[in-house]
Amino acid sequence: MTLIAARHPTTPDTATPDTATSATANSATATERPAPTRKTRGAGLGVLLALLATVVWSGSFVATRDMADSVPPVQAVFWRWIIALVAVAPFAARPFWRRRTVIRRHLGFVALASLFGVAAYNTLVHQAGLTTSASNMGMFMAASPVLMAGYARLGGERLGARRLLGMLTAGLGVLLLVGKGSLAVDFAPGDLWMFAAALSFATYSAMLKRKPAGIDGLAFLFTTFALGALMLAPLYAVSLTVQGGFPVAPGTVGPLLYVGVMSSAVAFFAWNRAIGLIGAARAGVVYYLQPVCVALLSYALLGERLGVLGVSCMALILAGVALAGATSARAGAGRAPR
Image (cartoon, rainbow, N blue to C red; front, side):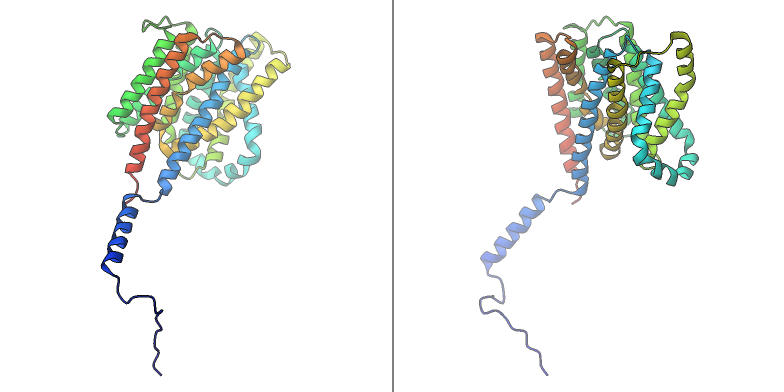
């Protein structure tokens, strides 16, 4: 039996020249405008997560400054991580148990990350809150992106001229804001504590790119929180003996819940995930927005004055972030698979 393939009467056997030309044009257009790749979508998610962490952490500076006169720094940080542990335990306990062998194998790395990102960084921030304003705390943390970029460059990452120009522009805005219109900045003791905190946080962020692949985000978060609390326990006991406890009242419990749940559990998870997606240097560009967020929150909640100079400097910071951020987006598109 012979099988004959039927053809639709309106379908030509061969394409006409016009049809062929149209098909070629459509093919060329599709080549010029590729569909968004998984890597490009991941970069967008990374920026959003870094922005979420930045906004939440901006509120933590206000909360830290608000309870600085009633809760000793070490006690505030210790309870912050106890609350954070309770918040993440329902989600992280099982991943932590499944990966306990890998965590034990890389315990030195995890302990070092806990020291810089959990114990030291937050203790320095709360110590700074005793002698400087919430606005200055946020502004000095803007040194972190520069330090993150320095770590990235040491690791072999190329930063690009436009990203560097954007970072310098944003950094200039921060310096003018801190110096009240002058580059001759008069540092308060709390400002120096904040610079040490920025260095500690940048070191932690740089370490995240080398996090062992076998430890997922929740397990890593749970372990660093637990180790950080253990590191702070002896200091907490000394503070409790020397300074006494703090009053349990809405004015202390509320800020502690915010920094424990939002600034620790939520923001650290978002930041760690963002670093994994876009790297510390690019996440650091988003972090430049923190002084703007802190200044606005301080004005709204604490009554700290902003003024024309503050608004002008924030505009300079935003312009630098936009320049560096647009460069990063174009660079990410340029690396899309062909």
